Image (cartoon, rainbow, N blue to C red):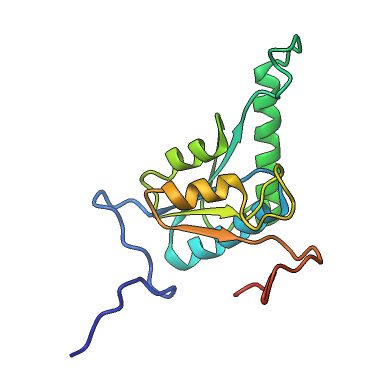
Length: 174
């Protein structure tokens, strides 16, 4: 008895949705090295699967807002958009090989990514963002995405920092 593989292989394009649209791979961007690696991974996978990429960055008010500090929200949103565009250009060039849409959204990063990936083929996040504790293997946003996403999630490690957390840490599977 011959069994068909349960998952798609990298050489086969992802199935089109019923409306004929290309599948979407959502990737979270936050300015960290692991998010940059996630952008590269998402683009390579999108090329293999003939998918589009949706790069998403979330922004929120700084912690000092409410303590008498006034920060114009448009400036924060604009800065987030610039950081997103710079990351895409730096990691994929000015003319990426796959379609890459960019979205800047107000809110908590995990909630923003979970919402953006609700109908996605795949969600890609970096293993560690800019906050939290440097010694943890998976950040809070990545963990929330892995636990609650409606689609498969790929967690991408950033470049080696010289700190090894077990065998194979920092090795890339290309």
